[in-house]
Image 1 (tube, rainbow, N blue to C red):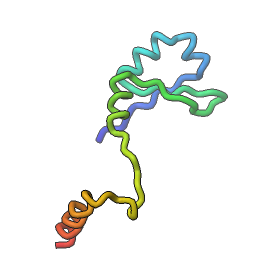
Image 2: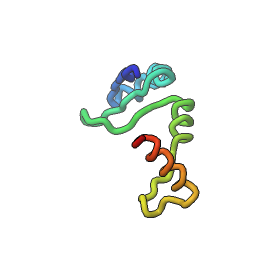
Image 3: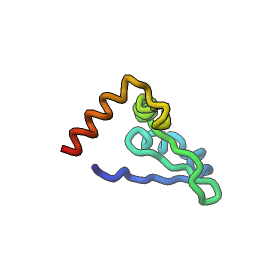
Length: 81
């Protein structure tokens, strides 16, 4: 997998050149810094939607729904064989 190019801009620079960084964010995340530290990330709507669609609710092993246990056990048995 190719590394994502890291574009960084200070908050002040982002304000002064918003259109420029907004265009860059269509292809690469723009890391916005404040006092030299990363604070926010500017991304495209498409990337935001892609990330939102991948959201999953985490559960502990003890809370795993019954309907998933058979699939998990079958995968584990296949990996052992």
